[in-house]
Image (cartoon, rainbow, N blue to C red; front, side):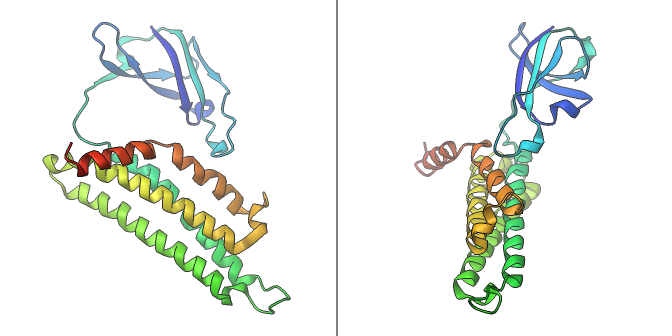
Length: 231
């Protein structure tokens, strides 16, 4: 029997099966359970009402005295010393948002020619400055993300155990850069970027969500401080 709630369950209403982590009371270990949609006691609490990432439908999964067969326990999690490299999908997602914003702004700058200047705003030095700065941030972020990924792929087990800070700093740096990429892009487009019809308004809302994905910025900064102080 499983009781509890899982918050932020992405696409909860559209899944046929749910993967759930639950504490096994007998020994305190953590089990990974597979639960089929429609199982008695499984309901969705439609709590997802966010300004960002609304389409993920990350409602709460509620388990109320859900009875499962023994084979629903897929495995017992064993805590390892290795960092969770798969979490790099988080900065990768936000890097994509930042790049999309740059492309949208560049397209707008090439096409938009106000009567006051009689030529596309892409010719204005300040517009070019902002687009250039945004691309520098993109290239830096891409180098960090792909560099750490390559390092992990080529590292030994012992080397991978030392990469916790690398993953944390990658997420921190890429998300901060992506936020700045979107901001610079919106400054290029101006007030039109605030319109709901503009993709930039959606990028602006969604990229902010990166600040609240793990690991948190303050944890990363504190871990970096501990590292440099050899604590």
